[in-house]
Image (cartoon, rainbow over all chains, first blue to last red; front, side):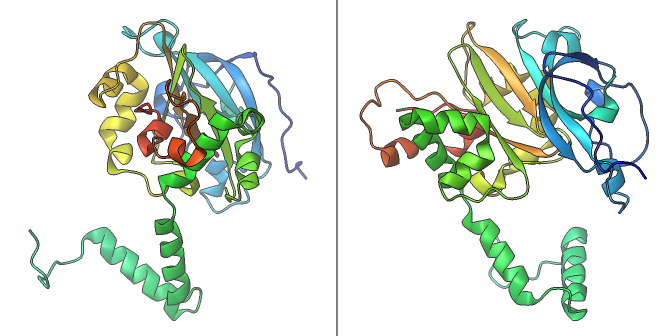
Amino acid sequence: MAASEMSARFRPGDRVRVRKAYPLGHIRTPFYIRGHSGVVERLCGSFGNPEELAQMRSGEPKQPLYRVRFLQKDVWPGYRGDARDVLEVEIFQHWLE
Amino acid sequence: MKEEGSYQPYSYFQLMEVSLRELLVDKGIVTEAQVEATVEDMRSRSPERGAKVVARAWVDGSFKQKLLENGTRACEELGLDVPALRLVVVENTASVHNMIVCTLCSCYPRMLLGIPPDWYKSRNYRSRAVREPRAVLAEFGLQLGEETAIRVHDSTADMRYLVLPMRPAGTEGWAEERLASIVTRDCMIGVAVPRK
């Protein structure tokens, strides 16, 4: 029997990369951020896995959810704003490596 | 202008909503009164709630600290129920401007701001806010100086976001209610800043 909650593998300040995967289904990881690297800003807690919940399953084990900070200039080629501009996105642990 | 009493056929989604609602009522899962009460509850929430939170943070340093640490709990202290999700409050400073978007759908802090404006749900805003935030802000009439970096928050999962704007100069000594009156919905989404 799996634990109902996965333990957190990352900590604030850790450098992480979003998996570059394109599974079907209800995915809360935006396309534009897949494959990009950023830094964990904070751990938000653990929440039911939306990919499972969308299939009317329990969503367990719950997945740690992080806010990950990306530099805009790393995400968008030719980004024209300030080099310090950032984007923060909530990403579930199973999407991070 | 639409004439009073003129016949308008239901759109696909309106028809689906009515059919589903009638089925749920027929099967005794919900009552008409419960549906009405929920709709009224949603309509009753407005950006004044968020403005009240912002004004309190401007006048009370320890409340502000609590708000930034745990938005949900701080709002509960003001008697505002922020149910079933966590509120993240992000603070604007002279060097950082925050802006909120939900690129996937239209996640929005409804309990503090009410029903989102149509533009917030538009494909235009959702796709461009993450990619060219400065251009989008300029269209809202907000030009940020070079000393200010932009932090865009994509509300993709279980958090909801509220921007804590900077208190404008020249508002020293203002009462909390007067301060709240200059905090607009757009200020708390991060596409405007409060003006005295």
